[in-house]
Image (cartoon, rainbow, N blue to C red):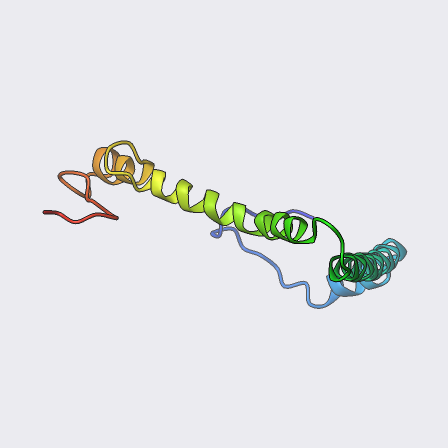
Length: 119
């Protein structure tokens, strides 16, 4: 199958022949079955594991609050890292956004203060 990279080259309409070709291929049906099977296993496994962890944290044990805090911390940490990454990118002294806007594209005369006041 050749796909032209130049839109000026004339193309021919093939109709439904590609669909008929893929639906008659036994490899396609095997791949589709494996995808459905994998999806079912992952959903069932994730549900069972999540239920088990939830039942574990619902029981009384010695460091229950600490364990819950550590689980919540694992959800919060990527957001905190993302805030610092965006703050670094928009820094008016060395951020990549101001480098692109001021130095490369010349959109601004000087770097704007994205998260500050101009006073």
